[in-house]
Image 1 (tube, rainbow, N blue to C red):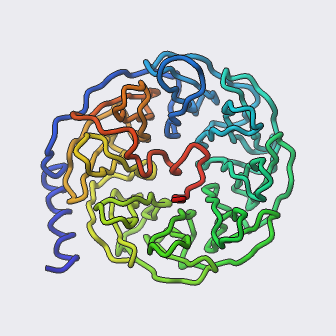
Image 2: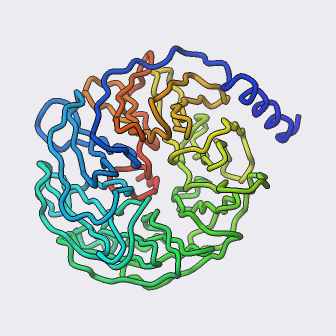
Length: 422
């Protein structure tokens, strides 16, 4: 049976029934917290404070506020100074100064006032602020030790076509102009195996690989606008590959030198916003190799294997709000995919694929993250939504906290967009 026929059957079932038959009950709502404004970024689940459990950091986007919630959903602190536009950039969390305690980095703003990169301590106090030219939105600052000197750098992309690199203290180390429309979704990893990390950033149709000083190592041109990339060892040879996502529903796998290995096209030929967001990577079928799971703005979620072959495709008819996340959320030993859609639904898919559960938020586009926020060893699903709320859910059976191959929007707290197995 052909992949195209299988895809038609799956899409017809979703269109007719609203979703495929669910194999599990809806998850339990543990708490729901109103943060006072619409949220356009996914929560970051992290350990900031000595209190029991973890914390969730999220941007109350329209209020231009960074909000920290406790494991029970209580507001611990908020920060709202100096952002000139709504916050649509996901925060990053990392120990910048080497004191063993995490800092929070948020980038946002734009227009005539420019953008700001702000570093906060675990209590929400500002440590430093850096001013950038241009606008930062729908992105995330990436924290990585690019030059292997023991101190991390922060890279940020702007809509005006620049990539900025900042020191751990907020000093601008370098900036490069890539084009007229740089994607803010940057990835960072040691792509070429030289012991230092490279930065992969997009501008228009081109994906650039920059070294630790901002020099272009290679560039790869694609068919349409590039929305960014994710990095991982897809073929198991010990070297990293780059998966670039494009506006015409194309995925391109590039080797460490930027050479095209294969291209996959999703096949959608309709108008409007239909493109791929940067994918998540994880071993979905348990064979020890990474699969690619990607959502599109036409409502589709699909799995592509390391050879560029489509494993499955589902279309829910509503745009996906953010890249999916992956983890064992129900304790069955299998990895699930969780995605949020414009109609307000949060959907959990297994590898078959089948819809394990589907629940509704009160408004559109929930942005999911996974983590054991209450410290009980079981996985919770956190979702921030346009209804001003952050939801904390637990699926029946609740999975083990260690089985989370891609739990956050860009994989990890530093938002690197890279799976690196040491």
